[in-house]
Image 1 (cartoon, rainbow, N blue to C red):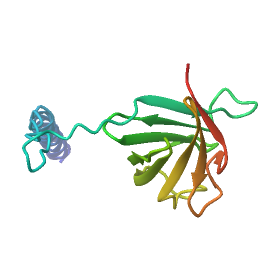
Image 2: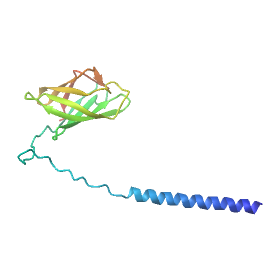
Image 3: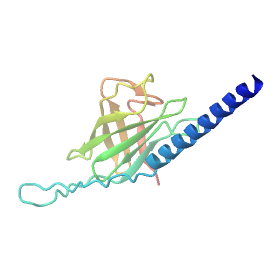
Image 4: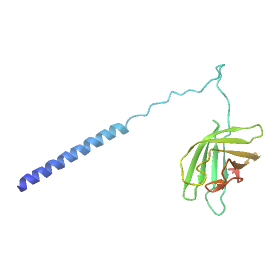
Length: 160
């Protein structure tokens, strides 16, 4: 009886180990797949010319009093997109989107994605940056008072 129990346990052990190694081999093959290369090309207008609209290429920061971390920083990219990192007091949240510049240097920003919820400002859909000088902007949120640690009316300045 003991031999039968011992043989059964050994068989279960062997089958378990072979199943695990088979599962690991399948996972390795899946992990080694090379992602497909995108075939996206720049868009052209009706004349066949490539759109040459260029945005800004700068990062502006709103410092936070008595903290080594900023209340927020916004990276404005040349392709008219932005990434805003907001201090949520318990970590940082990212806000992504697009922007356009008016003739006075003011910026209108539209939010396309956020990676946080349950924090102040998680309903933000758009906001404005009012140009104060070549290196500073005042932020104006649409419909809310603040996002994380940054409040509407705060001044963001270019990192130098």
